[in-house]
Length: 304
View 1 (cartoon, rainbow, N blue to C red):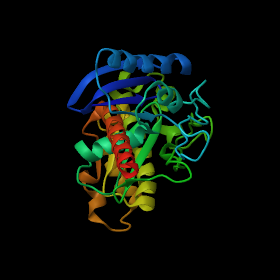
View 2: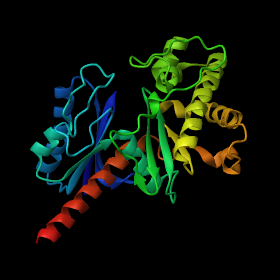
View 3: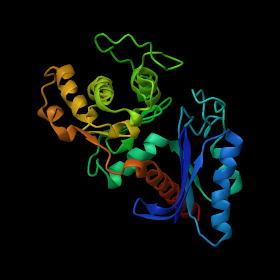
View 4: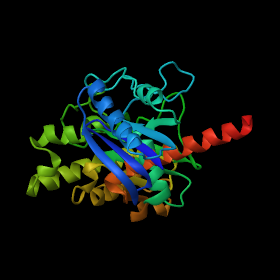
């Protein structure tokens, strides 16, 4: 049995289980300050352990940017984030100190990518990208069966995108203004239309779907040309906007303009909605925990 924490920008979701269809316990924690939010998450697992639940490991998938290099003193920290008050927060450390078990740490989108790869819309694929469109925009990339990591981790939401013709909006990103996230995230849609995306109706809803679809296509174009994924899976709250994915598919064909000429790029199966929906992130943290437990067992066997 594994524990997991999807540490999102607006909510933490704590779970205990083995997969999306086997969740024994769950709790949602609305994000406040770092100390308060982390203590509430720690309390969830303390209560479960005190009640007799056995956990073999805990996995944490956090909003970012985060430090994933184990050699860095800030491994497990959120680094320079737009989330007020959270820059420099040690997320991993409190869990590692509180519980005598392996604790894994990664991005929330990498966790969701793992889940969609095992149980969802990317089953059987060695190379794919998972994108989340919501409060922020982020992405996890699976390349030849392995999550892509390097000096940092992919920051898909901050890639440059061309402006839609006639779009004069300055962009909401505090770092880049009119990057992908700055132009098409949930807060950007809210700022443009004066209401949250889920509250839009009629002509405003249709206009928002076309707008987000354009910028999603622009982002996917860059991803297609740099990572050559077999599929792009789209989750997050904006992915459910009626007509948005159809608009993105049509616009992607326009932006690719027949290059490099792969028929798969024009098929609906190339750009698809996430199958697990909101369960992807929490389920993926259980995979992170499972992997950490396996590594710990292998290390123990090697030294034993």
